[in-house]
Length: 197
Ligand SMILES: C[S@@+](CC[C@H](N)C(=O)[O-])C[C@H]1O[C@@H](n2cnc3c(N)ncnc32)[C@H](O)[C@@H]1O
Image (cartoon, rainbow, N blue to C red):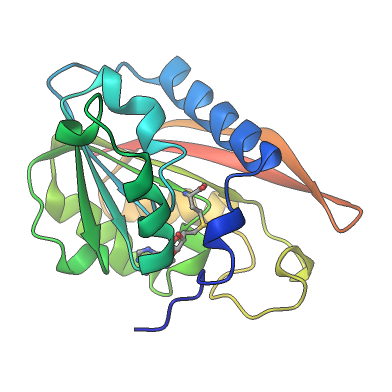
């Protein structure tokens, strides 16, 4: 499998990424109540900046990612305080045998996942009734965010993604543009959508 983050993993956790993921985690935990019994999955968990910030609040976080290099960095962060609460799955979410989830989180990763509809259906299959899906990602952009490098989606149109979720039977609980990434002398707005199954 191609590891698209091979050259980035070692340097991923820089101050900007840490700040950005902290803002996302804060938005999320200010918007929904996480329970100590909850089992969550983070898809595109990367080095675990988001997932590891939530482990103390829940029972378990399944961290799913198809980049061995990003997961290698994540594994180095596991210690006696968090290792029992984290389960790592290397590969695609659809191939992960995880069920009865209370919630799925996907931060800055959905634009790397080719088939958005299939991802949403997988979330539906793997979550409990009333479980949530929280997506944080870029608003539609002109391709400059990845400096012209081809990625499956150049951000998302909020209305379209909400419609996709509603078509699969999700209820939109929250929809907000809450942050900006300043890069390549441009501002890239970041949204959060929380939907309930
Ligand atoms: C931009 S990074 C974000 C990582 C992390 N969420 C963060 O904010 O620090 C995108 C991550 O999604 C992962 N990814 C991309 N496509 C994926 C897929 N189809 N299945 C699982 N993970 C994927 C990448 O390997 C990478 O770790």
